Length: 82
Image (tube, rainbow, N blue to C red; front, top):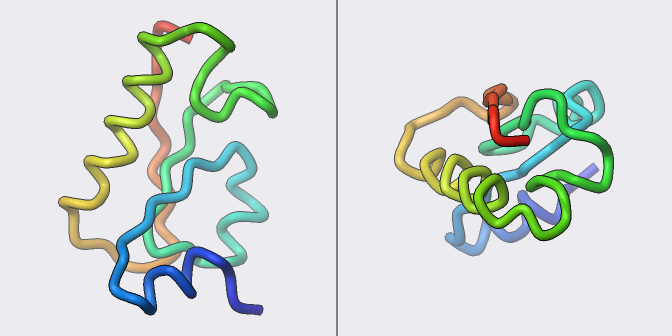
């Protein structure tokens, strides 16, 4: 199965997945991914109106673009402000 992320990557555009379901996401072997530990489904970047946490999650995701990685690695990140 080809993921949308792989199609975008094939066009030369790097992507980062923010996932709450590491088991399912791991099966797809995303090029780059982070897992915000302890977040509830529907809050993949933080709770509504929580600008501080949302910004921190997006920044952590963007930092993955600077790191050479093997597909399928999902980096768990903790965000105390959540």
